[in-house]
Length: 177
Image (cartoon, rainbow, N blue to C red; front, side, top):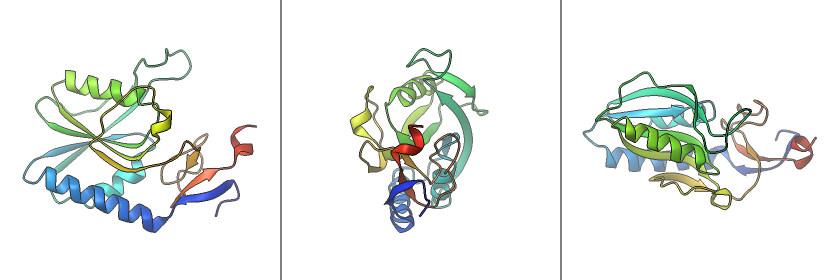
């Protein structure tokens, strides 16, 4: 275990099991249909890679990098750092996200893609319901977790820890420096 972690919250085995269960549901729901996986950078890169390898259908992938917070931004205002490249009008789009926290970004992103004519669903590996500020309906959620600062499996603190093969709880003294 990494020295900066208090504990491992989700093991590699549990990750594989959870991603497999999500893929099974998505395969059933989209059988015979084309799907665009809208991968939200950077955090969901690892999760989306595992997920897409388990999908038994025609898929396209696209990427967006968005936020609804940060320097110079009003909380809740969607900031598009990288927009998708494909026309989503009339297409089935599955937003693939690492974690639903406040819900602000995902709610805004869903609205944007729906305004562009997409049929949108959300798939998130993790959800922190205790942090929700904006309700967002996600059809596929891997698991709910407590309100802890988690890293690993794509999740970061200051761009670090994304490469950990499990999800761990970061020690408070690391992020309260």
